[in-house]
Image 1 (cartoon, helix red, strand yellow):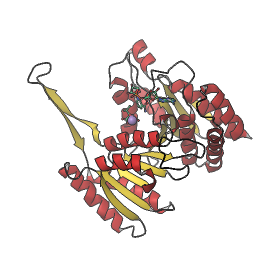
Image 2: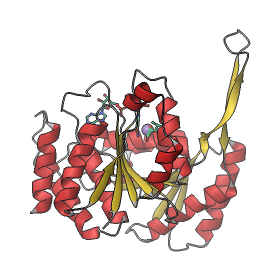
Image 3: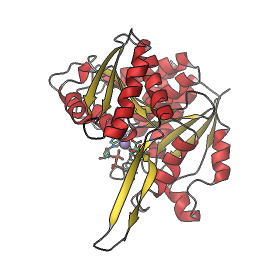
Image 4: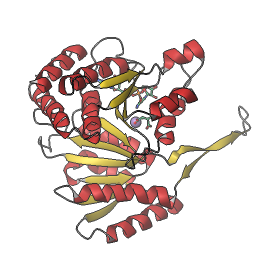
Length: 343
Ligand code: NAD
Ligand code: IPM
Ligand code: MN
């Protein structure tokens, strides 16, 4: 039986992860989960963010389910970089998979789009780019202060994520990959991405391709999200575009993701796209669907396709049955999803 590590984290993280675990238990009774106390509370208590011993223990699991990290009482970056990004980098989770679909019954904000018309997946590079942490500052707190952040792009890193995007596209109905970058300005990294894309595209004559600059892609995601199938892009562009994709498909409360290491050398990690939402934490009103759908991605990755399909079907029924404007209760949604998935 699969061994799943659970990092509930901060804010609404524990609230939504509790629902995801209810649902996982309903479809895969007896699955072994181990909770890891990481996040703001541990940092305040002990000063630790992610001890090496915990990192080593996490490496021994089949997958990780994560809620959210980040808290207003902790300086920005301490938990985001020290915990979340450290896990993505240490476990070489280079495919940050972020599917977006407009579910039947969900009233998205766009009058031009009907349910079922949006079904896209962003393959966001997960281990390089501006997230690599290169850069520094000089003359801090003086008028001469200078700060740099460098984007790291390797042929190996770029090509492997593009390869994954093409492999995914060739398994999908529309078989199309859109490369999103900013080749007109970021001429070093942009050229590397464009050449790697062309090389991989040449191996996939069955897959249609297009290129868009990221500013245009941000616009088209809002005006014509239907046009996308698989989108492959760098780490930061993918971060931003997937919040847009979430917003146009019913909100960040529905957006799931997988930080995947396709080689299996290290565990993959599954987490909602949203953060710890300090503005609603503790109120029991966070939508757990994003966490539940992330758990479905986890189940699928571990080879439990039937269990994953039951979770996805339960979410479909839940969303189809939601009356507009009626506030939700996190635990009630979790109970309904678990009952539906178990039936
Ligand atoms: P956020 O996603 O936490 O919140 C943005 C808005 O969306 C808020 O109004 C929030 O209430 C709402 N929202 C988010 N999830 C929701 C849900 N499930 N149901 C209903 N509403 C929901 O983003 P933020 O405010 O920019 O960041 C807050 C903290 O979370 C920061 O510390 C940030 O670094 C961190 N963060 C962590 C992750 C992660 O762990 N993967 C992702 C994004 C942000
Ligand atoms: C996300 C988050 C993270 C990111 C932060 C919290 C490091 O915004 O998962 O989308 O930028 O990747
Ligand atoms: Mn983000």
